[in-house]
Length: 292
Image (cartoon, rainbow, N blue to C red; front, side):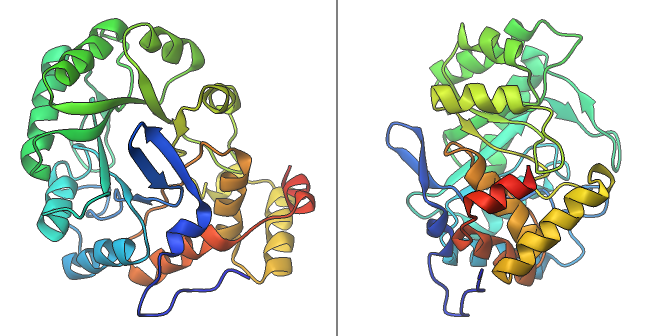
């Protein structure tokens, strides 16, 4: 049964095991996605900034040492909140951020992966996060208006200048990952993936073979992607383990591949603790087969 940790806190996230992002950079496979620490529509400041601050602090108490954010979350407010609450950062904490999307308004996302924009975005993230070098900087999405190699090439230049340590990609296909690998070492891929949406199975399989960390966004999925049978299977597995369906969905991702780092997000401590408890939920082979 996935139990919630005591108020004193334990390194619950460590129960999921660890993965090596790059030599010397090891993180627990239960991470945290900070996107929800914003206002409605992923826009502006959160309605309850004090609770969001508690979420960030509690995540670290529970052993989370990988936090995912982006300059477009807010925009900008998410990175600033993380720095305000957690800086100076404890040793071993990896804060990954992304650039390549712009935000004209709430729930509106537009791509801009021009080299000059990526440079400006990265330098802005450095200032907001209050760091001299970003451990993991990810291209948020390829821009169909910009040659992909130009976008990745700019990340390579920023890396050579010491502004980013490692490079990741997001929302990419296998051929784009292969093209990027001709220019840089790619240490992570962040694509939409969950028990209901497995469109990027081929990307995950490639990452698994090559030891590239895979960060599934929307790890808990959405009801509209789940058929009645899939919902029933989740509920049945959850009942057997005395867990929630969300915890089972996260445990399935962890069981799917050893390179997966889950990054569920929330704006409440209660939901955070429930998510992190999934790190200790071990599905059986029969459970995994039932979920498909």
